[in-house]
Structures are given as structure tokens and as C-alpha cells.
Image (cartoon, rainbow, N blue to C red):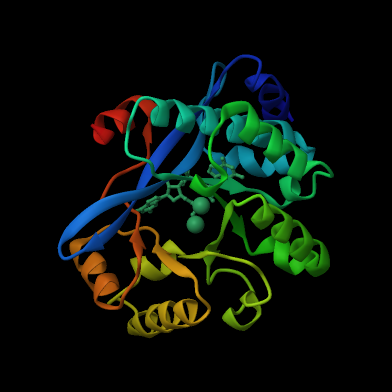
Length: 253
Ligand code: G
Ligand code: G
Ligand code: MN
Ligand code: NA
């Protein structure tokens, strides 16, 4: 309860900040930046650094996620527009969206408002959705996801493989990208069955016209295995950790 009260004031106290983690393509031994995942951090005056795995669930349960989530989208798009204006080569922003945010009655208007307000191009924005929303309300999920697509925004299914969704029903939704959960990447070569799972996942995602992002790439061997099996994009500590805007900008130079 105390954390909830602190969280209510986090926005006005400017205690929330965004980190950025690069996502790369890897071709012929060369990496190139294609996107960056936006990850929120809470630097609380009273509680110190609080991780999103602690406060996002509270934000979701209290509904605060709507206000916080909108702030995250606005701030990230503003930052992205700023980087573009300063001439950095364009790359996508990938923003995590909670199920509760998708159920805002005016979510589409909010997105449109932010895009026109910041001038950030819809085609350079990707929303990462976890499987939860798909289980909860099929009809609504399909409706809202299609509306997001109509704005020109890309959609990724996040943490794929951890929930209940199967590749066969993904074809009913307009996802552009599939993010293989880092648990599978971490276990490559440790649990051999995961090698097969990851391979099958990549093949089927491609069969459904989705690009694949491998998350949680921590070693050269993992990167090699994934590249040998035609993963499209890579993200993880082996490449870069999430970082604040300033160091991320250094990397862009
Ligand atoms: O960045 P980190 O590994 O600490 O994130 C932990 C969890 O919090 C992940 O599941 C991640 O998707 C989630 N998360 C991080 N940033 C955001 C955000 O901006 N919005 C939402 N809804 N979830 C986030
Ligand atoms: O659930 P989601 O995929 O959005 O979570 C992203 C989270 O994964 C971020 O909090 C980020 O800090 C974390 N992360 C990113 N790369 C790695 C990695 O290589 N290893 C581990 N263990 N976590 C990672
Ligand atoms: Mn994510
Ligand atoms: Na994920």
C-alpha cells in the first residue's frame, strides 16, 4: 500500500525514467541497429531504485498503468522524434504495453494524439504485447490490435513461449514480430529440447510472415546458434544492456 502511494506521486515527482536496449540485425558477421526496446525505471526518493517487475504489477492492479503507460509512450516518441531531428539514422522504438492499457476505451485516440503531437512516424513504432491479452478477450484483442495496425504501427508478441498461446492461433492476429522468450535462449545447449523448440519457433514464425527477435542473448554461442537458424534480430546483454538516453545516444554516434 505504501508503494502504491509512492507510485501515485512518481510521475509528478519526475521519478520515472526510460532506458533503451538496442536490438540488432546480424548479417555476414556485421551487426546493425534496427530498433531499441524502451524499458521504464523508477528512481523513488523514498524507496530507491525499484524494478518494473515490482511496480508494473501494482500499476496494473490500481489502474495507474494507464497514466504511467501514456507517459512512457509520449516520452519515448518525443525522444525518438528528437533523435531523428538531430539526424541519427532512423530505428524503431519498441514499447511494452500492458493488457490493461489496451483496454483503455480511448487508446487509439491516445496513440494518434501522441504521434501527431511528437511528429514521430507510426511506421517506426512497435508495440510489444504479452500473450495475456489474447487469452482474456479474443474478440476485443483482435479488434484493438487491428486498429493499431491501421495506424501503421507494428506489433510484436512478447515473451513468446511462456504463456498458453500457440503458433497456430497467432495467425488470427496481426503480429509483425515474434519475440522468443529469454528463458529459451538462456537454455540453448543446456536443455537440448530448447534447441529444437527455438528452431521450430523461427520456422513457423517465418511461415506466418513474422520476423523473429531473440531476447536475452548473453553469449557468442547463443548468437551463433540463433543466426545459424535464421533468427532476424537479436537483443541481450551480450550485445548491450539497457541504458539511459545519454549513453544510448553515444552509441548512436
Ligand atoms: O527492464 P526489465 O527487465 O527490468 O523489465 C522487467 C519487466 O517489466 C519485463 O517484463 C518488461 O516487459 C516490463 N517492463 C519494462 N518496462 C515496461 C514498460 O514501459 N511498460 C510495461 N507495461 N512493462 C514494462
Ligand atoms: O518481458 P520483456 O521481454 O519486455 O523484458 C525485457 C527485460 O529483459 C528487461 O527488463 C531487460 O532488462 C531484460 N533483459 C534484456 N536482455 C537481457 C539478457 O541478456 N539477460 C537477461 N537475464 N535479461 C535481459
Ligand atoms: Mn518486451
Ligand atoms: Na520479452
